[in-house]
Amino acid sequence: MTKCRYCAEDIQDAALVCKHCGRELASAHAPIATAAPSSSDRRVGYFALFVIAGVVAIVVISRMTSTSPTPERQQSSTAARSAPRTITIASVADIDIDAGKIQKWEWTVGADRPHCHLTGRIEVTSGGNKDVQAFVMSADDYTNWANGHPAKVFFQTEKLTVIALDVTTATAGPMVLALSNTFSVLQTKRVHVENVKAACN
Image 1: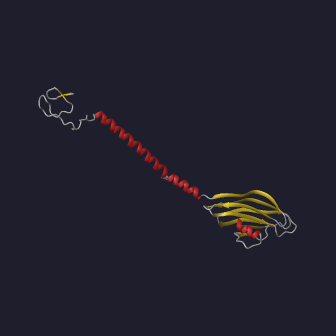
Image 2: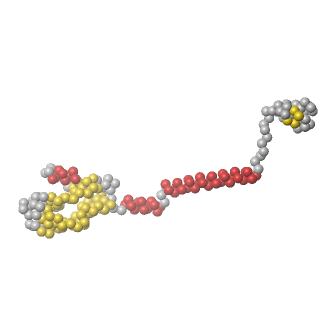
Image 3: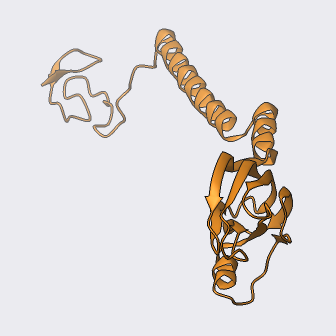
C-alpha cells in the first residue's frame, strides 16, 4: 500500500487512479526520477578525469622519449659505430720459428665491420740470414696455401729481416697472419713481434 499524493488516502501500489479522489496517478511504468548529481560529485568526477588524463600523458611522453633517441644519444651511438674496433693480435712477443715451419696468429673480423687496417712490426733478431716471409690471408686461403694450393693473399713479403705491417683488408670472418721459415733447412729464426693489431670499421 502507498498513499495518494493528492488526498493522502491509502491506495494500491499499482493503482493508476485514486479510488478516493479520482485523480490520475503517475503511470506504474513512468521512469523513476533520480536525483541530479550535486556540484561536489561533479567536481570529484572532473578531478578523477584530470588525474587519469595526466597519468596517460606522462606514460605516453615517457615512452616517446625512451624510444626516440635524443640528439646526444644519436651522436654517442653514431660515434660508437664509427669508432674502429681494435683487435689485438700480438702485443709483444719473442718467438722461435723452426726450420721448415710456420708461425701463425688468427683473429676474426665481424661482418658489421669488415674493413680492417692491420699494423705492427716484425723483426728477425737471430738465426741464419735473419729473415722470414710474412703473409696475411683468410683462414680458408691459409689452409689452401699451407697445402700447396692456389690462394688469395692480401699481403706477402719476400724474405726480410724487418717487416712493417700496413695492410688493408675488406673480408669478414677468420683471418691469419703467417710468418714462414719453410725455406730454411737448418736454421731456427728468433722473431720479435710488436703491436700487431687490426682496426676494423
